Length: 459
Ligand code: NCW
Image 1 (spheres, protein in one colour):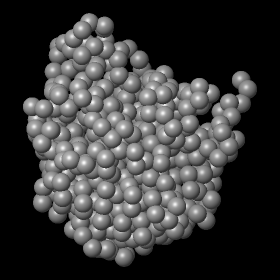
Image 2 (image 1 turned 90 degrees about the vertical axis):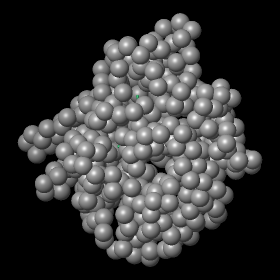
Image 3 (image 1 turned 90 degrees about the horizontal axis):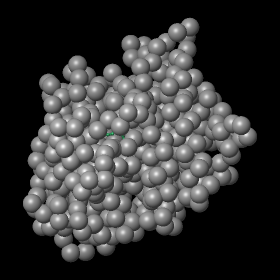
Image 4 (image 1 turned 135 degrees about the horizontal axis):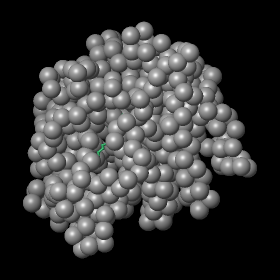
């Protein structure tokens, strides 16, 4: 097949998150985050695993960046650990900031453009003790933290993302309890969702200083009803509303969808939003990051075959007002997470966002797959992951041909890492990590992806 080239300057990267890779959780004055507390609470993470050591990136960042460079990546998306920079959620910890300065220096030396995310779920524990995201004050604390990080790094980091997957932080953290801090309250979850968006709105103007660009990275899904019965259509409307439109409308239009607001009324949502909040939240992004993994096929029949794998443990519903909606396996192949592989859904999301929210440059800030990997002859032949990424890149290529302003793609993840409630059992990395020795082995997908990056296209 002819080379399917990508636009000049396309960002070819991989993504990670602080708690999932760094380890060194007490080094250089780092404070505790809600994930430290949660992971150390028995019964919250499979096999009692935690991020205390993770893949030791805090000590091995130079080796990791060198590997990125040698593979051929030109961009890297990482997150900053809030409790490293502000232990206790306040002040400035210079030693914590220094780690990110060293990391960024190393990236720039390798010709890799840094994309920093401020919040990938590691809230300082003290801010949770004061109420966490359901409290409005947490959004103001976040803006202070954003200012501190920006002042230290904005001479060299020009792309900033405020919140990663706010749906997860709100609805898995405070609704189903599958993620830290493990609360199970729909009323708290909807408060958290609004305050995460408010945090974005308060921080975004500060982050633009020094010629920086600001985005956010919601996780979006293609959503289809299992039939066109009125009930299934309504189930799809509710899930699409909570998963996609709630975040897109707020970030890009400065409004919440009326139907979602009505659905959330029983949870006290109307009282959470204060006058002026949506003006703060809306229209502040210079680009939108999209994390895409799969499609939700939904049924109004609660007895339909369910596929809701947010954690290995029994959980409450993360869907306020749509608790009885079932997630149906539509028959596509699934990854090791049980998530259906549907590259067509990525094309659908990209073209939909570009059409309904025009003029916003887009990035795929996460896309990838967990599969069981085996080391053989010193290598890891992960053809399934390679196929997954290739199919999704082809969908990106098609979307660009259809006029979508897609500027870059970040594979999730650069390294195997701590997969939240699943512990170390699920591997998403382009690079295999032997957790006993911390030895890194680039998988076939890493070598292949590096070639794609170097050629700026699929061949
Ligand atoms: S768990 C999750 N992920 C994975 C994680 O490693 C990363 O930090 C996240 O940004 C890979 O990408 C994201 N997302 C949560 C998905 C929840 C699935 C809910 C299914 C409901 C039917």
